[in-house]
Amino acid sequence: MKANRDVTKSPSFKNYSSSSATASRSLAQNRAVDTKCERLLRSTLWRMGLRFRKNVKNLPGKPDVVFVCQRIVIFCDGDFWHGRDWSRRSRKLKRGANSSYWLAKIKANIERDKVHNKHLRQLGWTVIRLWETDILADAERAAYYVCREVVRRSKQVGQ
Image (tube, rainbow, N blue to C red):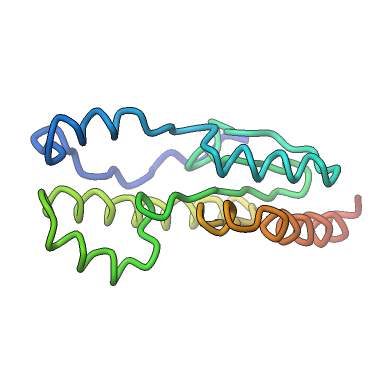
């Protein structure tokens, strides 16, 4: 199950800094795994009787939830970090502090997500990306969407 690691590197942000020391501390506290929306989705899926793996490191993008037998990966994407409503958000960021940093950072995240999606699909995986605010607003609905796909894929692979 080795994944193709020829992933486009995101730009280096070594010479950039966030707009303030307070912002830097805040950013450092952002979780990479086990975010509130991930925990909420996983607990809802578990209550529905679905079993999965979490944060599988040997797949492109380290998916948040993985259904191995059905070959489904799920990403719980943060609205800010993954560029939800990018045209509106980018206009807002252009007016803010340190705009070149934030625009480059989020654009790189968006492009990296596309590359991960492509590689996963080439490896035969179904990719589901859910937005953080959608999960937080209605975890049952998000889990039901995932459940339908798991059932559909289970029928395809004859389980």
